Amino acid sequence: MNPYEKIIRRLEDFILSERDLKSVGNIPFDHDGKKELGYPYIRASNRSLGNALGLLEKLLVKPVKDIKFLEIGCGIGTKCEIARLIGMEATGIDILPEYIHIAQQIYPDCTFSQANAFEYDYSGFSAVYYHVPFFEDYLVEQLENRVLSQLPIGAVLIATRISEALAGALGGDVASQHGFSVHRLTVEEDIGRLIVLKKMHISQ
Figure 1 (spheres, rainbow, N blue to C red):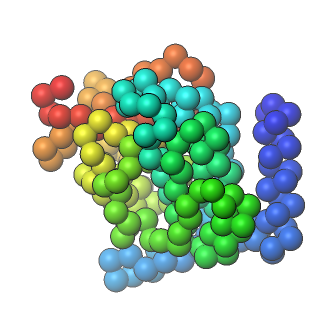
Figure 2: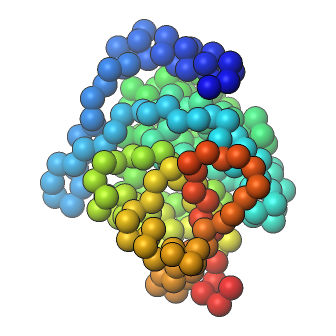
């Protein structure tokens, strides 16, 4: 872990400890008429995501200022601020209001809101990111299906985990969905465990 990452994590630990949020357990939420569990804020590599975000201008074929970035499960907002500093319009959602309240205080130039990821509208974004929001594979599959179906053609999904179904369908790096295709992109930058998926027309 590089020294910058260590500093950020130490600051996040301090903030979460001050608000009694450092040891938050799995977070219950309502979905399809039953209680499910989501992970609390899990810190993933800022460097890997920063490298991935640095590629988006080329991957999306649009100026960085026109890229609308969303993080699902944004926690206290660190990665949204990284996207904003790169030049993007950054939004974060989280189901825990305590996280959102802190994020709004620390990073007022980003947009944060409390929301259930299974009820959110993703149609207005160029790039969506999340880091393992659930343990259960069927929940991961349902979320990625919702995100990919709503994103505009040409948009990207960046994730550290995809469902077993999508991973199997991407055996040749291209998966056909209902009316569109999903391409797993190969990039030259070091993006760690991140997977970059691009939504395209089915003929592309």
